[in-house]
Amino acid sequence: LIPDFGYGGRIDLRKHLRPGAEKSFILSNTPGSIYGDLLILGTRVSEGPGPSAPGYIRAYNVRTGNLEWVFHTIPHPGEFGYETWPSDAWSRMGGANAWSGLAVDEKRGWVFCPTGSPAFDFWGGNRKGKNLFGNCLLVLDAKTGERVWHYQLVHHDLWDRDLPASPNLIELTINQETVEAVAQITKSGHVFLFHRETGKPVFPIEERPFPPSDLKEEEAWPTQPIPTIPPPFARQQLNPGDITQISPESNTLMSAKLKSVRSGGQFVPPSAAGTVIFPGFDGGGEWGGAAWDPATEWLYVNANEMPWILTMVESGKDISTADISSGKLLYRRLCATCHGMDQEGDPQKTFPAIANIGEKMNKAEIMAQMSQGKGVMPAFDFLKEAEKSAIANFLLGGEVAEKPDSFTQKREAKTKGGGDKSPYTHTGYNRFLDNEGYPAVKPPWGTLNAIDLKEGRIIWQVTLGEFKDLTARGISPTGTENYGGPAVTAGGLIFIGASKDEKFRAFDKFTGEVLWEANLPAGGYATPAIYAIDGKQYIVIACGGGKMNTKSGASYIAFSLPN
Image 1 (cartoon, rainbow, N blue to C red):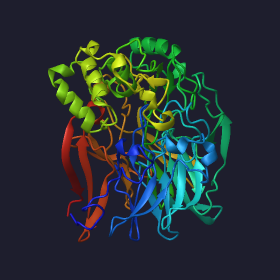
Image 2 (cartoon, rainbow, N blue to C red; image 1 turned 90 degrees about the vertical axis):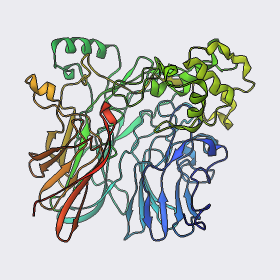
Image 3 (cartoon, rainbow, N blue to C red; image 1 turned 180 degrees about the horizontal axis):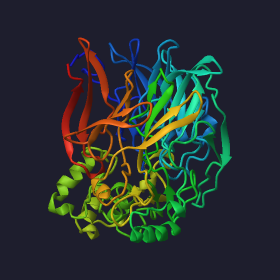
Image 4 (cartoon, rainbow, N blue to C red; image 1 turned 180 degrees about the vertical axis):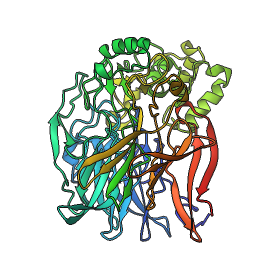
């Protein structure tokens, strides 16, 4: 470490936020972007119903570690966008963070920042308004952090529709003129296309009406922006005719399930009855991003077509007067969104089951993990020891040992203005799966798409990934959920891993035909990198696996053409 950089060689990202946020979960899961002597960073923060740090975008001097500028994505008094929130939101709310990566326009000296939803993801009764700069393509002067322009792609987000990937800075030929543009893919399966200089849409974007919320205190925004060109690269609504036909039994069961929940397409507000989110929480487009081919002016993007069901539940009364155990109530508010109300995690094993956690950990170990976090689990160091003890006792079956009246301070008063107060939580991130564990919708379940952006049309769409057991039953390849993006070459190839079947494939960029594939030691849930040494070209992909209930790995695999 260089001792005179930052604080003994380090920068603490918990600093330079609003008071009280230093104990909230915060990390940088992308390397940031370099402009001159500046490292420009977005962060990942908690988006649950508990306390959340604000997602400020910050620039640090790469030589000294000094903070050079901060952009408040939740505006302070007097700043642009302040009126799109309650007047005290800047002092208590979190989220609106740029976690998915930035793009720098070196010529203009601008940084393009896609932002995510404000916290809490699924209820915004305490943040009424459009909530700038949540869910925006936000363009800042890289030298000063001053706003150049922005476009909000989701108003008052209630669906976790973060902008999931870095934008593509591109040049298009439209009406025989070269247009410098920026393309932003979304979880909803759209491509938003803007003039890079002005932020004006290249093709029309319509504000369309959507239904109101019936959750108490919630005020869903009445319209949302929808691109008219190009068409979406993922289906937009789950209808009865779209239910799986993998088997007659699956079709019957899932058709009945669909009737019991709400499914009206994009931007139907969350509900206690259950609302279908389709495309799901993981897209549509995802964090692997899109690949741009300047030769054809085509954008290549992989997509998920997995429906999810979001079910809201009331989080309970104030813990100082609750008629259920404090541990159960705290678990329901803070833990159940990942581990499930039944503590059984999720079928894809993204979040582990903890119903029998007492077989692996004792109370002290559980409390320590709550304090420190582990893996994707954030640290809950804002909890008092008595509150951690209550949750641990509940998980171990001894919740009666902690009574609600043992807490002298209400959880709602923990953050100024009740920033972590929500009358609702949700039952978890639940994929809509059939009785065999496959998506409840007809295939395709994962696709690779070629989109001609100069003409605004989809050239081809093919499935990405395969379930061998379904192929053996005579079912054509369905595609699978996929995480990680494509890379396109001048030689006419698209390379992509991403799929659940742990394969690495090369596609013909003009037709979408699979030309080559190889088995990986673990899932290649990453975007490959292409490079050349001494005239020889290589392509490498990280094989970390671990998602979608697949095995984990720890290797990089490189391929090259034979000499």
